[in-house]
Image (tube, rainbow, N blue to C red; front, side, top):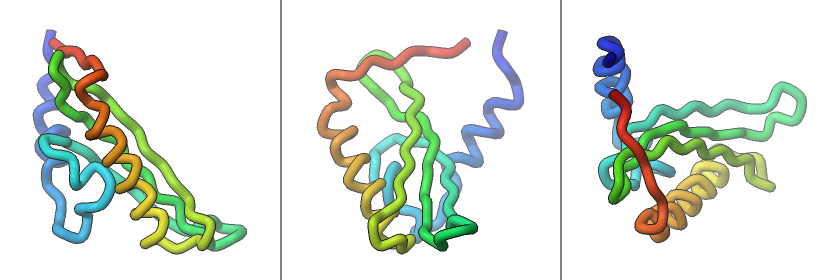
Length: 100
């Protein structure tokens, strides 16, 4: 049985602006959503993304999160981009699946 509302969720995960091209935004074929914000106590930014990436065997769910030493949004987003590069370099060794 397929969850009908899932199509709308995947569709909105593909709608993003150019300024969200960091992290999974640089991953070909990824559908994702992200969030960010400063810590209430320290003010350091945490950025996170949850998404689906294609693999040779299907789709793989991933979650990335980072908080930089400097505490800035830009540095944390750059850390997510580095994680996405490592993920892309190794995606051939990962297996995904299919939901129905």
